[in-house]
Length: 633
Ligand SMILES: Nc1ncnc2c1ncn2[C@@H]1O[C@H](COP(=O)(O)OP(=O)(O)O)[C@@H](O)[C@H]1O
Ligand SMILES: [Mg+2]
Image (cartoon, rainbow, N blue to C red; front, side, top):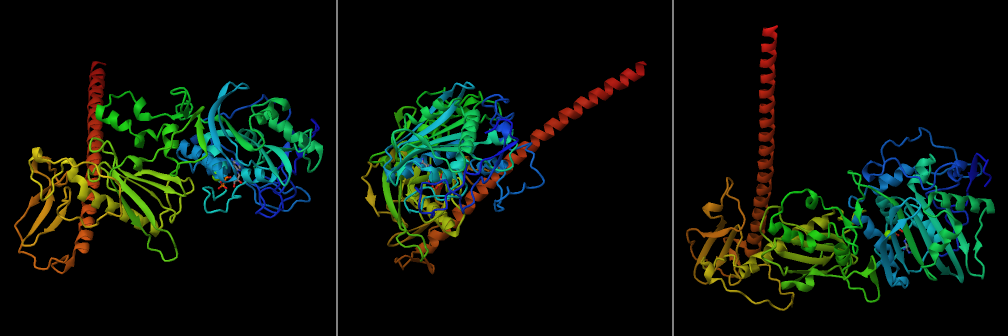
């Protein structure tokens, strides 16, 4: 590039190859048909010259504020001469797109997914680590895998929006957006190094997705500087699509805006990659609102942690609460090692996630369930074939001491919702009951932390509620909760030994010998008599609405004996009654929740009232003082 030139046309920087979409390899770089993030960009000369300090950072380093005060031009710039008009992607979009990840670990998971998707291309590991950037003495995140890597066309897909090379049913990636959202969620800038051999051609490519560069140079389109090098022959050869000047311009921008100041330093990054693989470095990591790095590397040098606000709020924590926080269901929120251990359902045979030099041990909570059961679930959609999934359910080994519950729901082997609590907050029903399932029949949301709210999802949710309810009804007695048949005397609780896993033993309508505890209403049938029991809290546990946890069944007036013992009661089948029971139970839970909310509102209002009163008193004193002052004058 001529240092004096006003602008430099870097037309070949990011054009997608016009090859067939199926061809990931392609040997790319030619003019593309597809809409890429960047096309024919006019890069201001200042973006690569030496007048600006190296590795400049943004004024705002907090992710949630980094999209603010962005001046967006009123008009969209014209396409360069000879180029077709195309929709632009303003750099601000990189930030807004990344806000889909509320949780930084969700973004990290996307990058792990990309490596895991490479298992089918021979990947055996993904390493996640922290490195220190010498240029500005700051930490950076590194992801490195030994997958097939990306050729020039592949890396362009990686850095463009909506392009995915994944069409297989087994891959996790599908939207072609994960790389962009995740890197931009974790830091302002990301540089990618990838090496691959396709069609007998060995190449290495470097691409830079830099929010800092785009903002600081006032771009109104997302420009991604890239260089490709042919390493098939003895000597590495730059792959030039336009002119060699374009190649150098791209290199200059890379050196100016990446953590590496010289070409040698930059290319040294390939040293650890081997013949194929990908390395992603995310730098200028975002800070939280308090101005500290969101990710902590110092709390544990074998882990990457997120700040756990509740741990740092300085308040004394009850030992019971400490116990809850030591469980994986809580730890996964802030410990990457804990989260990564649950992230993939199947145990890898020949693949490792290596976090800060130490492999992550995969963990499936279902492996240590007590009283495990497996329920087959088939979503009620005729178009989905073979969609039957197995739901494993059981008590966690810490039950009943720990009130952890919920379902770990996976999609295509990847954890989407950890410990999804399907019962209402504040309810003890289901405490200690955890489930695990893979639900490939529903679609994950874009951040892969939840599912889209389809009718299939809603049906699944209702079913899971019923599963918890039924499991609890048939098993809670093992921890001493009373059942209609069991005496209230706690000393008579019979401990039941753990049972081996059972397949399809789930009984949606528990027999009275299994008993029930915390039910709202239950009809138990015996040969001769029928006893109606309703769950009601003992007086000392009742509150204003009468709703409390750990209901004790209370016997009401015995009902006339039921003659039809074939699951028919008063014209209703046991199934109907059971459904009604669940509905009532859920309603009850809803009221319970509402009550808690209202109590909170009352507390808030009382607080406000107190504050207003004290303000009023202060003002009255002030007025008095003023009056006295005036009288003295
Ligand atoms: N670590 C990697 N190794 C090889 N190819 C990758 C890697 N990361 C991303 N890619 C390529 O970039 C494309 C886009 O990635 P991404 O934005 O995560 O979307 P998706 O995973 O949904 O396809 C992928 O389809 C894949 O071709
Ligand atoms: Mg992906």
